[in-house]
Image 1 (cartoon, rainbow, N blue to C red):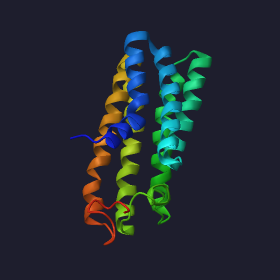
Image 2: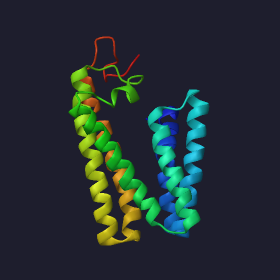
Image 3: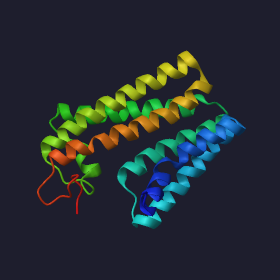
Image 4: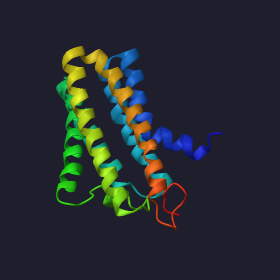
Length: 189
């Protein structure tokens, strides 16, 4: 059974992308982009009201979406929103993998308030997520350039779902590498 908290978290996390997809599907790309921008602002506000703070990761992703979404609307050119997904994922992937090169897990400062896992786990998560973000950026460019804007809208939704599934699968690693005082899934108690 889905808890109320899970449903709220789901819509905070995925509501803007779902709004973008349906807005684009029924009204067109630019109304869909407006739904994405407004949905992102609503999700940030809901997160702030619920948690009394904004997680750094949410702030980073929202800044990208808001900047490039508004640029898309003002320039009336979808390339900006497509570029946002490539730049965000590509830069974040390079950032995370670059940290590993210097023996730093740059995911840890972003998520250590949520997870209580070993340094080995942070390194593995950084490698996995870094690769996932780079592959998402490359796929984004390929889909947009080879299949066009309409296919890209579907890709954006599917990529979001796949990244969420990938993220949930990382709980098994967190479970194995958790600290003794963490929850069974490696979460801080």
